[in-house]
Length: 77
Image (cartoon, rainbow, N blue to C red):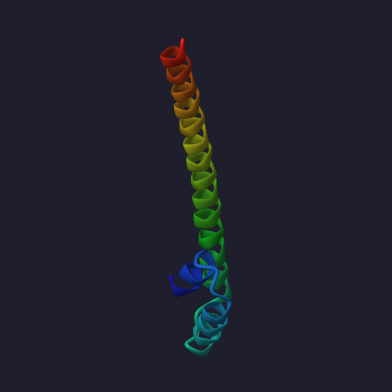
């Protein structure tokens, strides 16, 4: 889990430390690769969700701006 967390957290020194420690204590290469794959999935999903959230915020801001401009024009007219 520490390997996956290091990757997902983008901490290069942490990853190096945890990979070295995993090998010292005899964690199999298969389990290490599994942790790397898990981190990849977590990171990709997190990135995907963040981009979706950014899009929704931008759309909400645009709607609010459009509505605000419409109300300003009605007040002036």
